[in-house]
Image (tube, rainbow, N blue to C red; front, top):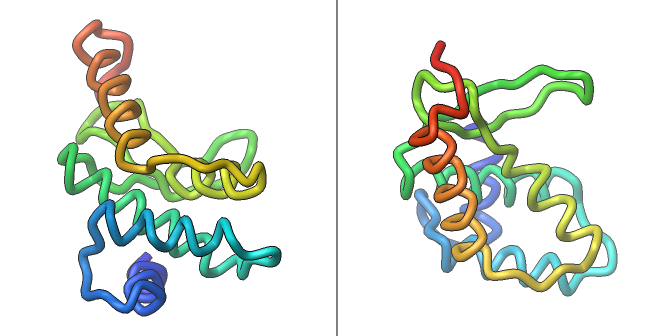
Length: 123
């Protein structure tokens, strides 16, 4: 995780932690590329996750399910989480132009809404 975050900072030519503006610039630069380095895409996803954690006060969690293992983010002691690496990878594959900060705010709002509605368990 640390190596990926440092790679993102190096790519952005910015110190850690990266904010949404820096993450957006990285995303937009990768979107313009015809071929993408997988390690750099993962680094972008990790930086996106770190920005979500900073904004929402979420934690890093490691999730294993039928699709594999992934580093995710989610509220402390709750079973709900989001997968920032996959979120970024899928949108890059679709060449989707997106405002990542607005997207993050929507995701955070959805997670918090589910918690408020008791639609998730504690652990």
